[in-house]
Length: 521
Ligand code: ADP
Ligand code: MG
Image (cartoon, protein in one colour):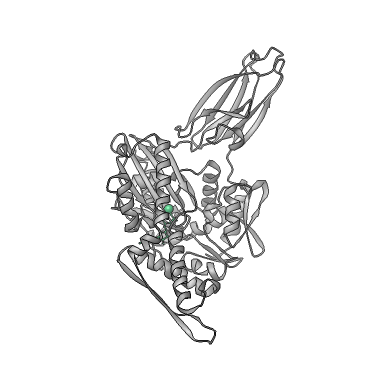
């Protein structure tokens, strides 16, 4: 078996790591970078660039530079998240078949799995150059709240990129693995993950061989970008006062200011003061060029971002409440995400959880490192490979009268698993029942996702409540759900197999893979 790589496929940045001499190491690419912007920019249909070069193009080539595509992967076109993204993203988001999402670039529609595949191919290439051998297998991390459709779409992205995805791993679980959790019994750990555009907090309960996500909460539009925006506003306002020139109206100037704002933010993680400087950023009406040169202290930065930091703790409150735990019952707090390098965040987290958060491992690399540990344990088939029993990310149940859902398999159940429950008819002389299979956490069926349905007919005529039907849910090790319904009196049975789709059929994935390989990355 060849080497298996671990990939943190992030909303803003992606990292690939492997185990070198038993230690997880993030791999540096041919440009000397470990942290790669998750941006794909099309030069033409047969040539894309990925990473830093693509990120630079977002402002000047907004229609052909696709960023934050992870917000869309495996989503339904009519979902709220997709509507929100459509309002914010400058690239074109269109409807594909079966309620799926596509990105329209140039003349072509791309599935989100195809977009992610370009990033994965870049990661694969970086790993191959480092290892000096072909790589065909990977572990890829996803947020804990990803549903089966989003997980499957991520797996499909791997297939399109020529990678067999051995395991989809939860990001908070990967972080906990990197810190060596899983050896001691019964610990409760909080993962505070502030990335580029998203904030996730998870509470994990760690036992001998299972990492259970007992609660997750998040804000899908809160991250480092918001801190950049506050600086952009501050610099643009100050510059306007000085020169009466509005940089926000000048695309090229704004692109430079965006990059400079992020640089200043990062510098303020190390220094108490930093000056934003852009030479000849714009010219005034008389044609005279003006430099932008504006100093800012860490204290002022903390003041203009105070409300953003407080918003993260509202979410932390929610996660604690959902897990029925108090701050005192938490054994450890792990910081994840590039934005947690900010001292103002670290101080605030310490105050909230009343303990020193773990920052020993670089917070922007820790997820990839955990993925590499899991990858190695799978490839070596060692005892550690049995670690991390897969769990169902969302509850599965059947629709019942009154628009409710009766859960048969609760979220976080270890798989494989099987459950049978007996239902009865709800009307007199009812001769058929419709079994609707739902996924989600709401008690109301309408708020959950319907995975499939079927009808069991030819039931004997009888007063309501007398005909008994056994409904069985079965999930195998690959996460495939089979549902059957059996009439107890006659033994008649109907069933369906639900293969969760990430929005692409097998044939489409194969075709996408062939087409994708024609595109130079
Ligand atoms: P994601 O998981 O969302 O893909 P990351 O965890 O890599 O993203 O976080 C990216 C964010 O971290 C960006 O907003 C970036 O500016 C920010 N960041 C990276 N390093 C630092 C630093 N030293 N100080 C402050 N912010 C940082
Ligand atoms: Mg991340």
